[in-house]
Length: 414
Image (cartoon, rainbow, N blue to C red; front, side, top):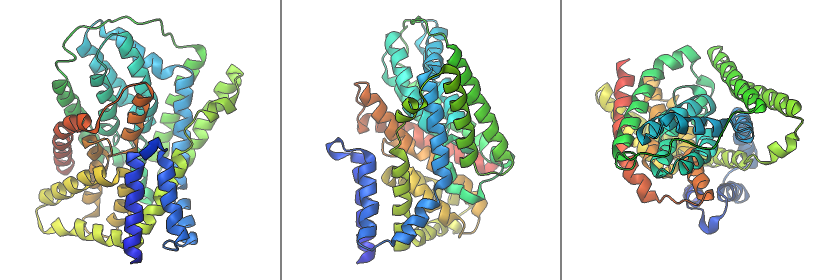
C-alpha cells in the first residue's frame, strides 16, 4: 500500500504539473506532491533533505544560466540576434527560417535549452511579427532546436547533469561521444521541419525591421556570456562540476554589467523565474520516493531485458523506450532515475550514450516532454498565441523518431 500511494501521488503531481489546472503554476503541484509524501511519512524528511541537497550542482547551474538569460534579455542581446536574423534574410522566409534556427542552435549549445525556450522565443516572435511572416514555423524551430542541440555540450541541458552526475565525462570525451550524433540530430531536425513548414516559409517576408543596434551594455553582456561559455568549457575539460563555475562566472558578469550601467541589480534578480528551483528540488524528492518504491528496480529490468539482442537492437529498444518515456514522465525526473540506474547495469558506457540522447531528443515528440518545451509553451502564451498539443505532436511524430534513430545509429558507429 505505501508503494501504491507513492506512485499515485508522484504520478498525479507530474500530470498536474503538465496540465496546470486552473492555470496554477507548475511548481505548486510538484511541491505539494513532495510535501504530501513527507507528511504521510512515505518519504522521511531526512531522506527528502538529502535528495534536495544532492541537486545543489543543478541549482547553481540553473541560477547562473537564468542570470545570464535575464541579462541578455534586459540589454537586448537575444532581441539583437533575432532582429539581425530577420535583416540578413533579405525578404526570404527560407533564409529567415535558417537564420533563426542557427541562432537557436548557438543559444542552446552555450546557454542551455531553457534559455532558448524562455528568452529567445519571445524575441523571435517579435521579430517575425515585424517581418509579417507566419509565426508557427519559427516558433517550432525554437522548440525543436532547444532539444535537438541540447547534448552538444554538457551545459546545453540541465538533464545532462542529472543523468551523469558525478560520472560526467571530461569535455574531450563528451565531444567524442556526442558531437557526431548531435550534428545528425540538428541537421535532420532542420531538414524535416523545413520540409514540414515549406508552404508557410515559401512566401517572401518583410526583410527590414526597426533599428536594433546592440547597446554598450549589450555588447558587454554578450562578451560576458561568451566568456562564461569558455569558462564552462574549461571546467568541463578539467572534470570540474559545472554548477559552481556557472554560478560564480554568471554572478561576476552580472555584477560587472550592473556596476557599469549603474542599474539596480535587485530589479534584474526579481525578474528571474525563481520557481524553477523549488520545482526541480521537488522533482528530486519525488524521484527519490519512486526509487524507493521500486522504480529503480523496474528501470534496471527494462535496461537489462534487451541485452540479449545485438548491440544495435539493445540500443534501439532502449532509446525508443526512454524517448517515449520522456513524454509520459517528463525528461528531468526520468533522467534522474535513469542516471542512478545506469551505474548498476552492464554495457554502461554504451547505454549511457543512448539514454542521454533519448532523454534529450525524446521531448521533441510532445509538449509534455521537457521543462524547456513547457517553458516555450508558456512563453508564447504570454505573447497571446496558443499551440495545441496536437499541433506540436503532428510535427514531433515526424521529426523525433527519425532524428532519434539516426542519432543512436551514429553514436554506435563512432
